[in-house]
Length: 579
Image (cartoon, rainbow, N blue to C red; front, side, top):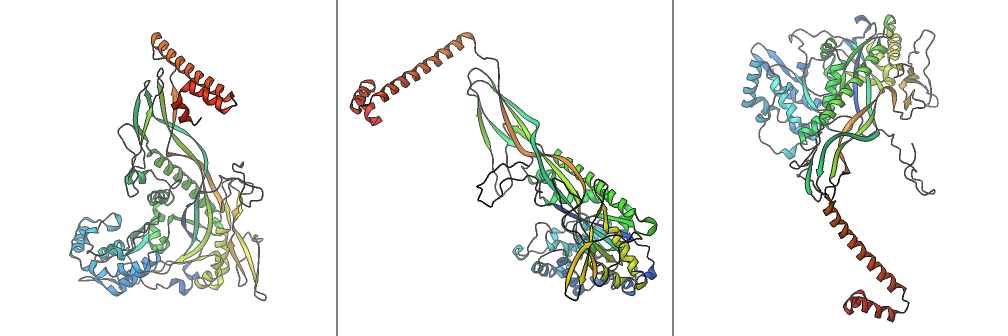
């Protein structure tokens, strides 16, 4: 990229502007992949099969023959822990959970619950309990701009708890606070059956880099007659909050609505119905951060390549979702130039921009062409890191560790006879990723720790003769490699493995105007001669003034120059000019 700004050679500042820098605010999401490692129930340790407590027990909700009993103390502790886990401010959490008894006893909430029971609707799918909240000082609670108001989640929990359902506070794919109903675990007197399962948590990121900037479609044209003046006003898609939200995209904005729409689209594109149903028993805790869906892959000896195909399909579907999301947002961006609309942006006050345009030409029309400006982006999907997780379906059974903690996790949850095999198969799933050119990229490296002098040495993670990575030990562990991987020679390298790259064109809210002068005269011969005579008269007057000034400047003697000026302009003119 050529340099556009040059600095002094002694200045340590950069000597050029690099336009190949990813835009700030890249969107990040997690894909949870259930791994089939060929393990049986007997291969898991007792710790992996322990059902600590059901969701209902953890939340203090018990169904009885006479109805539903709620232990407010346990429910409060449950909400306090869950709201804090998804990122709400601790003081706001305390004030929000303090409202739980009132929400449970609210007559308005009870009437709302009765309607929910009759029509089968659910609060976490669009219900609104804003009318049930007792009056209070809103300054007491911090409403997070992304997560939202923690009191809303407490209200939803209370409404579902009265029905015997556990509404677990969690977040949507875009990071907004919501609740998700825990799966029905059957009668309270029948203990749930554990379902031990290992997962691979793949962390993806979508980075956007600015490309070309050029003209788009024509928005409007104006023609002004000779000497005509008019006032124009511009209306953009950012005029109202509603239009700004539907036209926002993850490519060029940080609107939470754009992240929500994109996350929903990715989940729809990448998670099949069967996997989605299974995910309910795998644990709601996996959604404690933005999720881009669920997947499954077999890493047994008979299906060693299935996880590669699963990841490739995910990358393809995600890229298609990015393109479709961008096209939908761009299509919503409508600019108009009229003489009656106005430009207003909601920033606490209403602003309006008007422009007056005139045609100063007396013989020709003047045409104004208004065109959109479009921006090209290079969007790149890349895998940044990989973690390992475990759940047996019970409340609080979700465990999540980086690759460096794989040995400890497996040692706790798997019987000694299959520990090395389990770790090796998980490393096999994470160790090699095929990039956008279908080239295998090694994503992990081995770290060997010397306990004698407390030093560590990093080395390449090479495969053994049997095609597996050696199992981690007390002095040897694996981690995801840092920096860009397999992108040597790339003009725009990104962290991790690049899985897809595409060019996307987005409309902007900018307009460029081009003036075109008409070629035909609007005057007859007589009028044209009159204008030419007037122009000649002005030209001759200018020439006369120039000749006088030149003659005066040629006189060296100040007195003689003043005398000559007095004769030409008169005494008053001489004094005014300071001659």
